[in-house]
Amino acid sequence: MNAVTSIHPGELVRLPARRGVAIRLKQGQTIKLVNTHGKQVVDTWAFNPQDLCETMSMEHSRPFWLKLNPCKGDSLVTNKRRKILTLTEDTTPGVHDTLVAACDPTRYVQLGVVGHHDSCKENLFRALDAVGLVTPETPSPLNLFMNVPVHPDGRIEFAVPVSEPGQYVCLKAEMDAIVVFSACPQDITAVNGMRPQDVHYCII
Amino acid sequence: MNAVTSIHPGELVRLPARRGVAIRLKQGQTIKLVNTHGKQVVDTWAFNPQDLCETMSMEHSRPFWLKLNPCKGDSLVTNKRRKILTLTEDTTPGVHDTLVAACDPTRYVQLGVVGHHDSCKENLFRALDAVGLVTPETPSPLNLFMNVPVHPDGRIEFAVPVSEPGQYVCLKAEMDAIVVFSACPQDITAVNGMRPQDVHYCII
Image (cartoon, rainbow over all chains, first blue to last red; front, side, top):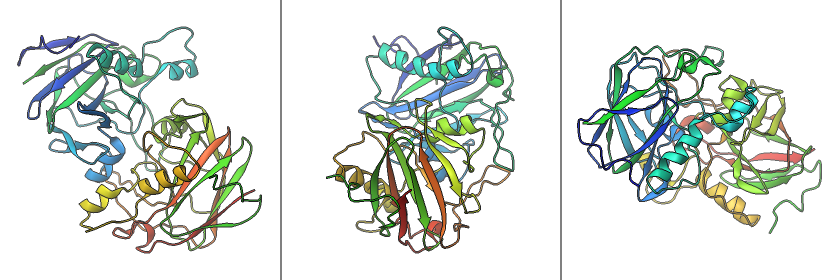
C-alpha cells in the first residue's frame, strides 16, 4: 500500500507523465525533483501525516514570504503557519506559481474536452489512496516550474515554463510530511509546453 | 439561531468593528457592503448552503478571471468552478486582495501579541455557529478593500486601504449562498489604517 517503502535514498524514480505519487518524508529528509524534459509542471502538496487537515498553504506562505513565489532558502508554511518544506535548491530561473488551483475534471469540461481527461486533482486523490490516506479537500498547490506571468495591471496568463531539461528543485522536510507530486496532464493550454512529460525524483 | 431573519431588504445593518456575521442569500439577491469609515478591510467568504465544502475559491477565481483581483462585472467561482457571487457594483478604486489568508490566533502570536486577539478566522467560525453551521476549513477569503500591492519583482506588502468613507461594493448571489463578512480586527499592521472600524451592509 505504501508507495514509498521501495525507494532507497539516492535512487532516481520516474514519475510518469500525467500521473501522481505520494511520498512520506521524515523531518530533515530532502526530496529532489528533476524536470527531466524541462517544460513539465508539477503540482505539489504537503500534508502533516498526523493530521491531513494541516496542509501546505499558498495563502499562508505568501504573507510569510511577503512575495508571490518562493526562492531558494524560503520555507513553505501550513495553514497552521508552521514550516513544512524549505526550497533548499533551485537550479531553474525560479519561475513557479502559487496562484492557480489544480486542474480537475470540471476544468477540462470548461475547456471543451469531451470524455475523461486526467487531472492533478484526481492524481492527488489517487496518490494518497495508494498510501492509504484520504484528504477532505484539495489545497491550492505549489505549482513547481509553472509560468504564470503577472502583468503590472494585475492580469495573469498561462505561459510555457522557462525551466530547461535536467533543472531541479530540492525540498527539505521541516516536519514529517506526506508530499504529493502530480506531473500535470494539462495539454489544452501552454502550461506544459502542450506536451506532458515524465519527471524524476529522489530522496537525498 | 439564524442571524439574518430579522434583516429586511434595504435595512442598513451595522457590523461592529472586529466582529463577523453570516448572511443567507437566495439566488438573485444582492448584498451591499459599505465601508462606512473608509479604511476597514472585510474578509469575505461564500458557501453553498447545501454543501459547506463547496466554497468561494480565490485559486479557482483567479484563472477564471485571468487577473489577480475582481473588477465590477466579474463573478467569483467556487472550488467546483461554479459562479457564486458577482461583483455588480464597486464605487471604490477597485483595490481588493485575493492573496492573503485570514488572520488567526497564530498570526497574532507571531506578530508578538500576548494574550487573546480577535481574528477573522474566529469570526468566521462564530458567525457560522450563530446560524447553526460548521465549516471544516477556512477557505482563503476575498479581502474586500484590502490593499496588498504587488511589485514587479513579486514582492507584496500590507498597505492602508485606498477606499474612502461611504464607498461600497455590491455582491449578487448567483446561487443560494451563505456569505460571511468579518470586519478585520488587525491593528498590528496597516491593513485597516491601524484602527478597526464598523462597516454596514444591507440586502437590496
